[in-house]
Length: 302
Length: 302
Image 1 (spheres, helix red, strand yellow):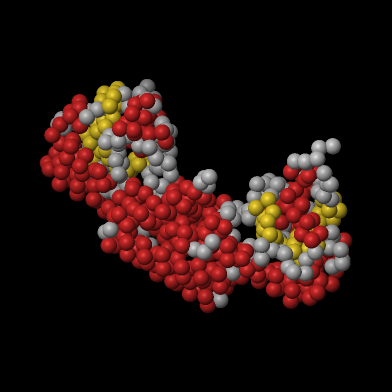
Image 2: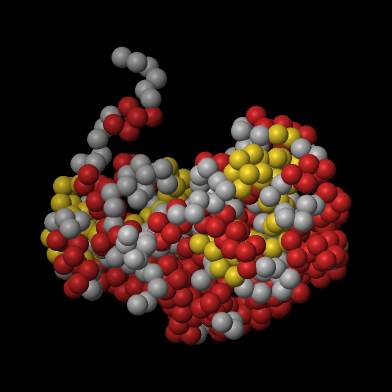
C-alpha cells in the first residue's frame, strides 16, 4: 500500500514476458541478450537464426538458444532482435518480411542508426513501423557465441532511436526488455546518435587501430613492441575488435567519421606545432586541459 | 650442493644490501621504489629529499622515507635515486655534486634518456661515471606519495641505459636493486631507448591526450561524453596523467616525437582516403592488420 514504489518495485511489478524471442545473429551481443533475458525469466523460448552453422550450433550447445530456426519461423516471434553486422542487416530484413506477423516488434543492436533506419524503410515498406532501432553501449574485443555472457548489459546504457512510425507501446516494451538486462535506456534521433557515437566510440577505435597499423610500418616493430607497457595495453585494447563489424560501423557512419577525422587532423597539426615551437608553457596548458577533461569525465565535478 | 641454482635462489643468495638510500622526489615512482626496497629488506635507511614540503611530510607520515634530508646528507648515501620530472633533473645534479661521496651510485627514473645523460654529463663532469641512467616501465595516472605502492614494479620491465664511463659493478648493483622489486632488467643505448619509447609509450599518451583535447572543442562536448563507454575509458585512461611530467617527457624527446607524429600523420591521411573512397575491402584489410598486430602483441604467435 506504499504510495511511492521504488524503481525496483516498479520494474518488478508487471513482469515483462516475451513468449517467443527470435535472435538473428548469435554472436557476442545477440548471444548475451538471449542469455540475459533467459536468466531473468523474461523469455519463454529463444529461436536462433544464423547463416553460420558453427556459430548457431555453438549457441545451441551453450544454451543461448533453444532451437535452431529458419526465417519462416519468425512468424512465431513476439520480438525479433537483429544482431548481425550492419552489412547483413538489409538482407535479414528482406528475409524476415514475408513471415512477419503484425504483432511482432523488431529491433537491432547496430552501432549506427541512420543507415540502418534507411535500410529498414527500404526493405520493410510500411511494416517499418514494427522496427524500433536500438543500440546497446556494450561490447568487448572478443566475439562469437562463446564470448556471450548474461551480464554484458548490466549497468550499461542502451539508446533507442525510434522512428516516427513507432508506437509508444513498442518503445515501452523494448525499454523494459533492456531494463530487464540491467541497462539504462534513453532515446534520441538517429542523426544525433550517429554524430555522438562517431565522436565518443568510433573515433577511439579508429585512432587505436591506426596507431597499431602505424607501428607495423615502423622499423624494428617487433623489438619496439616488446617494451610496450600498461599504457599501451589499455590504449590499444579496442584495436583488437572484430574487423568486419568495425568496417561496417565506419562505412555506415562515413560522413560523421570524415568530419571527426578532419577536426582531429587540425588538432594534431596544432599540437605538433606547439611541440615543435618549444613553447613548454603552451604545451603544458594543452596537456593539462586534456588531463582535466579526462578526470572530469571519470569524476564529474559537482 | 645443486649445481644449477634457480633464478630465485640466485636472486636470494648474496642478499643485496643498501645501507643508505637517498630518494630525491618522493612521488609515485620514487615513493614506490622506496616502499618496495624497504619491504624486501634491501635498504637500511631511506633519506627523502624534496622541494615540496607537503609531499615530503606525507612521505614521512606514510613511512615511505625514514628522514627528511637536505642535499648535504647525500654524502651518506650508497645509492641516490633521482625521481623528479626531467625538468628538475639537472638542478638536482648540481645540488648533489658538492656532497657526492666517491662510492655513491646515482640513478634516475626519467622516461627519456638522451637528454638526461647530457644534463648529467654537463652537471657532474667526470663524476658522471657515478650515474647510471635508468627507466622503470611502470606508472599510473595517479601521482604523489599517496599513490606510491610497494608492488608497482612487480613483473614490470626496467631499462638501464649505461654510459660508457659506468663500471660493470654499478650496473650489476642496479640490476639487483630492480630485480629485488620484482622487475626484469635489460640494457640498451640512450638513443635506441628514446626511439623505442617515443613509439610505444609517448605516442599513445600524445594521441590519447590529443583525442581528449579535440573533444573539448567539439559542439555539445558534455552531452557527447555522457555516452562514452568502456572503449573510451581504456583508450583515454593515460590522458589523465600528470601534465608536468608528460610535458617534460615530450620536450626532452622532441626529435623522436616529431618523427613519430609525421609518420602518424601520413598513416592518418592514408586511412582517411581509404574510408572516403568507399573501398570496403581495403578498409577491412587495414582494420584486420591492426587487429592482428594487437592480438599478436597480447598472445605472441609461437
